[in-house]
Image 1 (cartoon, rainbow, N blue to C red):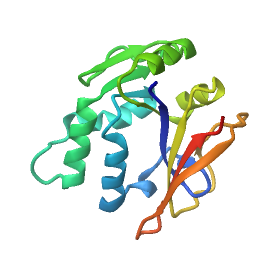
Image 2 (image 1 turned 120 degrees about the vertical axis):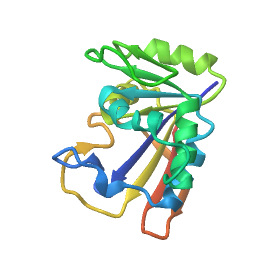
Image 3 (image 1 turned 45 degrees about the horizontal axis):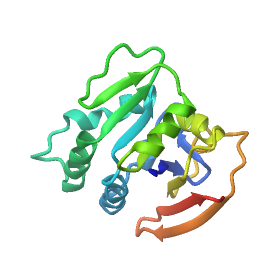
Image 4 (image 1 turned 60 degrees about the horizontal axis):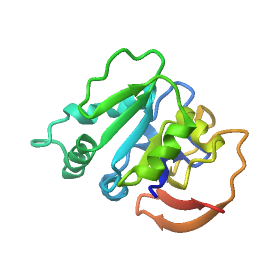
Length: 186
């Protein structure tokens, strides 16, 4: 059975974007980016909310040759090779290959995907992920914590959800970023 993985880059105080919607404070350095590439590489499908998809579609057209750092070119290849599902009631079309739109988040369709998928898959965007957390669908959390406190904004983890977690891995990076990998406790 495939696992549903929540991967988020967050401030130490638990936000993926500040009150103005900015997230430039969590741009990974090459060491962290290469590490995230290795987490992302085996994933077959990415589930996105509209806003997260709009941010991530940059990787569809970024040059995979030239001035882009090697870790960026690698991530672009990884992202382009994966299937993408965008959950949106307002998005009319998508501009990336291997991408489809779903109008509603359906927990039963995610359960079917978990039962039939050949590879683990990710869910990104805190609002979409909140639906998966509330439906008890998230199997693992990969949190990359930037060494910054931003004081408010869009929370990385949902309110109103209680979930026991088992710590599987932790790692500290030279620039002060911390990685935490948890499995949902059974």
